Every structure is written in structure tokens, then in C-alpha cells.
Image 1 (cartoon, rainbow, N blue to C red):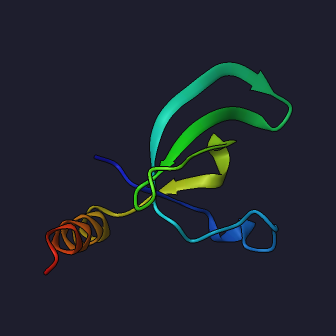
Image 2 (image 1 turned 30 degrees about the horizontal axis):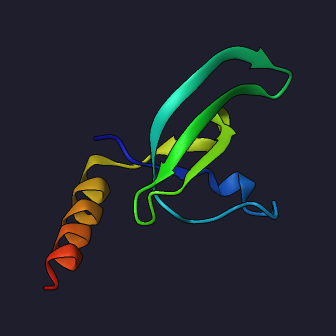
Length: 77
């Protein structure tokens, strides 16, 4: 599973957050701002529509750590 976060360059935008997302789908139509994509928040399962270009993949090591912490939390540990 590849995890994503918003690029730090978007941090001045009102919609910016530091949450972790997974990619659900990509719209094949290109808009003047790029391709639109649907993302699912890893913690809340809430889906959000954001441009593909504003997200960046998280490193494998950080992804493993995030998934491990999430699973431990789900187990109540």
C-alpha cells in the first residue's frame, strides 16, 4: 500500500492538512490544474477529491511505521 501526504508547498492553502491518504481513483480528464483524484484518509476513511499533483508518496520506512502504529491502536495496544 502506498501512502501519500500533501506537499509542503501547499501548506499556505486553507485546505492543507498533514493527514495520510491512500489513492482511490484518478479521473482521466485533465483540467487546467491537473488531474483530479479521489483520496481516502487512512485514519478516518473519509474520501476527499484533490488534484494528483499536490500529493507526494511517503517513504517506505515512514509508511511501515504509520501502518504499524495504526494497527497497534486498532488492537488497543
